[in-house]
Length: 313
Image (cartoon, rainbow, N blue to C red):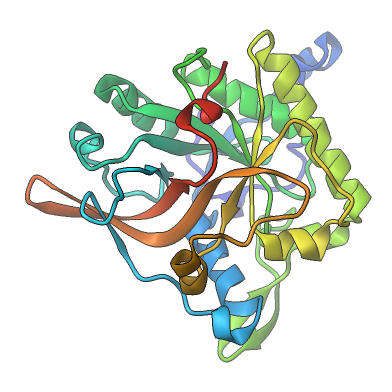
């Protein structure tokens, strides 16, 4: 049973959720209830934070809006990502709007679910839209437990199929919610509150270990599928929290960069040492369909490789 609670109402201590996927001994323990996400930030909030406060001031202007299908280049593969924050998606018009794939938020931490996943997944499947799921990796919760919970949420929608669904994504970036699920304000800059990133409590080595633990559980749980996880991140966070030598074997990057200058140049700010395929370039996208305008949406573009590179094999 899912409790209808805000994340603010949750407390620390749910780190062992779905441990039954990892050991039969743990499976005998009571499982804490899942909590519907309510106070989590949309991806666009972190993307704007990156744009506004990192890099040379001359590059901090964000790209303006993007409208499907008119602004979509025919030679490129575009997608959107959605969550419970998304108000409406014109599923029957997605393909004609030149949108090739959709990612959906599934989970965060080890007990917090995005309650819209089942509805979005069923709608995408009915419309023949290629879809995939992502998990927001939270500080303060073991990576193995988070990987297990992500697997549980993938199972809730029937699992992943070869050649049909997208590779699973782990969202690794600013985590502004602590163990008590509250933001800790550090200061203000120009009237804008600056919150603590709880990954700042970790060393680079500790972060890498939690990520690899999560990825290992995903690969094991989804075997024998050829799972090549994608890590969603931005270069500002990566260079702030991780040592330049950190590598996540077998993973590609989905990079977030909303800068107008980057879009004009056609090259995002990605991280060193990893290949990237996807680029999230604005959170101001809209879809024009059936005489209506839908949105805003996070807009993504496949900039290297092909759509086949994103699919489970």
